[in-house]
Length: 256
Ligand code: DGL
Image (cartoon, rainbow, N blue to C red; front, side):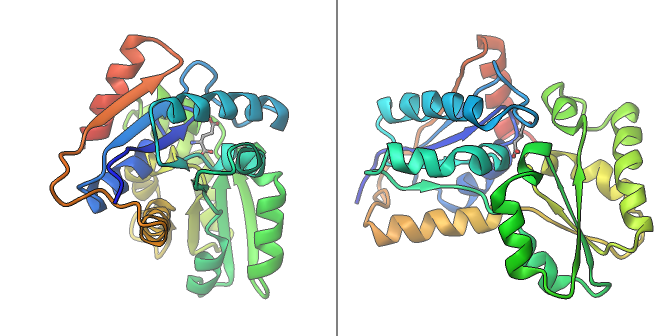
């Protein structure tokens, strides 16, 4: 048993989509969320720069006594998770996998799209996942340009965002794709507008929130690190941006 918090890190608001899964499924666990905010978006930064920011973030979370770290950012996982695991080898670090495998199992049209940042789509992790799991399936990589910025600005439902999302998602559907992987943790916050664009067409959206939660749960079991049943959980939020950003993280975490 271990009542220390789980640390969750993202470039900004996106990892809150993972935070919500952990909050829902692990109600005894304390959670500390660190949304960088000062350097977001990460999507077009080089790997070395992301490693520097990720190291800084993990050090902050470990200083708060976290027992396990979730890198709730596909981009930071792709760029830095191996570096982090080498550097902080005595703590379990969970990263995000591009959900190519489940998408390829689900597709009937044999065409899936992975919507993610440029950095994620250029990564070895993505290339390896396609080589390993996509036999007989065409995987279309698509950059969600401007999507992270829309979520950071709290513009998830605006007309401008709907138009932006339509300009990216409509061509994917016209190509015959029937499964779209949301390969960036910011994108689940755009599910509403993405579904509006899809309309009544038969297209499935997949994100990584639930599989990550399951992975965290299995590691807590394996290392006997679950919080006790009588533990009263605490929820804390941190950022490298300002107090206002931190307040917005908190309200988005508990928001709709
Ligand atoms: N949430 C990050 C991800 O999952 C967004 C990356 C960014 O900051 O551009 O990839």
